[in-house]
Image (cartoon, rainbow, N blue to C red; front, side, top):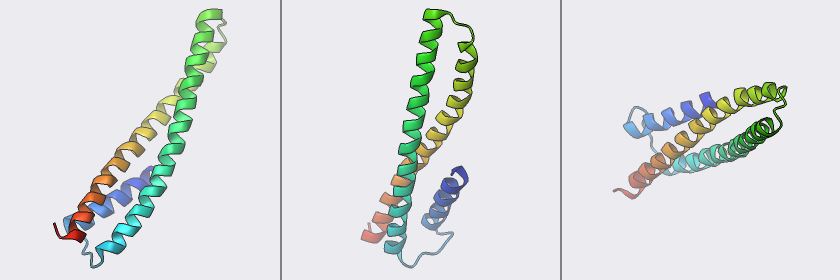
Length: 114
């Protein structure tokens, strides 16, 4: 997903900068809205997964503090190992989607002649 979202956004940036000549901005705008919808869905799914992992991590940490049951340290470490990449990936999805909103605004300006 990372390669796909970055490649797509760079292609649209190339269109907006004039590196790629676009004859039909409305068609590009429609495609862009579809792609943004896909990435928004992916972002939502990753937000849900990230929040669930964060809740599980905090819950295991609280149980570990209260019970001092040391084997939970292994589970806590595993959850941290998974949580950190989930946060990084969600961060990427969020930022790239925000950039696509700006691209959308720029395309609207070109369509409306502003």
